[in-house]
Image (cartoon, rainbow, N blue to C red):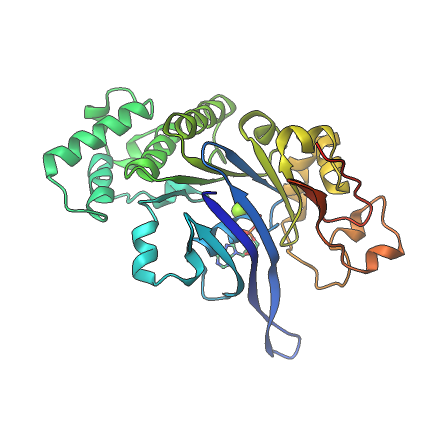
Length: 320
Ligand SMILES: Nc1ncnc2c1ncn2[C@@H]1O[C@H](COP(=O)(O)OP(=O)(O)O)[C@@H](O)[C@H]1O
Ligand SMILES: [Mg+2]
């Protein structure tokens, strides 16, 4: 087991009608696992808590959010209980992270080659010439043509597709065991999207590391992921191997997503604009669920058989 996230709980601060400050749950006990050599698709609508989950694991919560419980065992060590100094050593070295809107992580005032050199120097003493050679090598394996020339470029001189390849190169240059990519193709044209996803997939396989692709697009999960965890309102509502979940989806949300993907997902993302959990009791999906009954006023547990599980009273999951 590469990464074992158990019962991750995060709250965020809210201001009430009278200006009083309080906290409400933003992640209500999220659990998922990543196995070496496999890619987990973390999927859900805008605002479901996907980025929040990744940030919490990596110790990147903004001040308005606070960790209240759970474990995130990475190679057996709990990331949630690591010192900031130890976490800094893990981030960018043993875990590569392509943040949402990753292009913003490039320093506009530094040539891309120098940024790839700097990413190495943060984690170990380097010999400049060797680090520069490694920078060019990774650019080349990221499919960037003429890497020596491109290493001298400023970020604004590159196309969005090349920028994203550099960002992925930055995440991989220290040879991590786990690569997390948060909506890595947002804002790219369709052709470039496919190229970037092909690249991510190939690198995880070739390096025999673990991967997490965060996406709103079930089509991406179908094509590139081995396992899936569907998130809704700060919870994982269904998880399992992609083949099993796609052929026998057990949660009404998963069924709805499969029935209407991908058009409806894209629309929902644009329209809803993403509230997280309405602080309601019972099943968070109740208000939108075609199958809801009075039973759903009580929050459903995660029920399942083996690796396939769903958070629904009516889920019937047969052992594979
Ligand atoms: N790093 C973070 N620190 C604090 N709050 C965050 C962080 N990332 C996301 N959030 C908040 O978590 C909630 C869920 O959003 P998010 O995780 O971004 O949804 P998704 O990625 O599924 O679209 C939002 O209120 C968002 O502002
Ligand atoms: Mg996000």
